[in-house]
Length: 486
Image 1 (cartoon, rainbow, N blue to C red):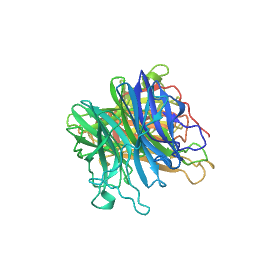
Image 2 (cartoon, helix red, strand yellow):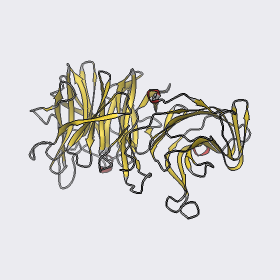
Image 3 (cartoon, rainbow, N blue to C red):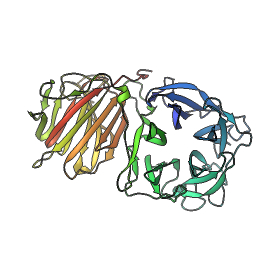
Image 4 (tube, helix red, strand yellow):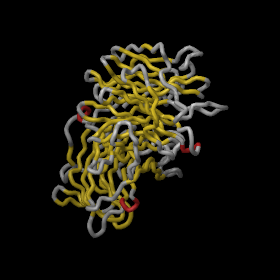
């Protein structure tokens, strides 16, 4: 996770991540200027160090003289290649350029740039008025010695708001690229941004931002060239978590993305962007793509603490009792909350939940960074009856205290959650600085940036029914390096 310390809070845009010699390298679009491709390195996927920019815009008359947009980085024949988006004519024309490097550190632009432009046989290629030609966000995968590039483009026919597609290019050497027909034609969005392809369990998956929908989606194909088709549930990550890029790292396929949210821990409150923690990609038996939180053990601090009758804590509201090592909660009307006595800052919290058979809780989940009563805090709430999971913030008025108006409940994020037929749920929450991510039954369902409270108690809750909690455990984490106030 990377937090910019500069004056502008939105300096990380779309990016690419590659692994080399045990380290991760992230190359990102620098916002808001779009005048450089930034470079970060990391050993653990969480703590990143900045390096000098990899590329900058060209001369005013060059194809990339206006702005540089998203890139794709790959290696072939011992050389690192970067396909990147060049803008000219005030962003109305986009074409693909190329740069090379021996070591990922020093990049040289290819003298034959640009190397690819839209082919009018399949794509919009004529620019008129203020209309923009989309040809950007390349990502490259190699199969059987052939390089395949996928990028954001638009079909040359059809309804204007439904022409967004994933263009397809191929190359044998990384320098000369042939434009081919689209690999994916969703025909339900203006843009199909940052399309990225990877192979998993014999299937090929394309992840992309469904333009205008603010949603990260995926498509599936039997061949790398497509066609990539829509599964029944095509959602990948919750809202404001976009630009997913794959990276094979430490033997597992990881998905990196940026996150965006409100900077609610200071009076200066614009949106805020981070390079978020990586996720692990897996496919279930039906071929559905699932993202879940990765292994945080490199950042563990101290031992894992198991909540038990001997660990301290108690009920704030509702009826709670220990049955052996199980914590059973009931609340006939409204909420029942059980909280620890101790405060925590950065941690991983896990629990197993079994809903009461006769009167199952209509809502249940985890409470973190709460006050001593749970009247304030962050709540990861599962609501099976609405097929939903929500990240809820409860606070008093920041400036005037609990005796004034302005307190209340706000839903920071929501996602869909199919009910478990057996009423059993495995919950996992990671609170790391302003980042809160939640997994239910092995799937990432929430990931938001919020920090109205830096420290607080944690616990579990039920509403309008009962549930049994087992193996409730907290693992403290090392604190992130964050720009808390600036």
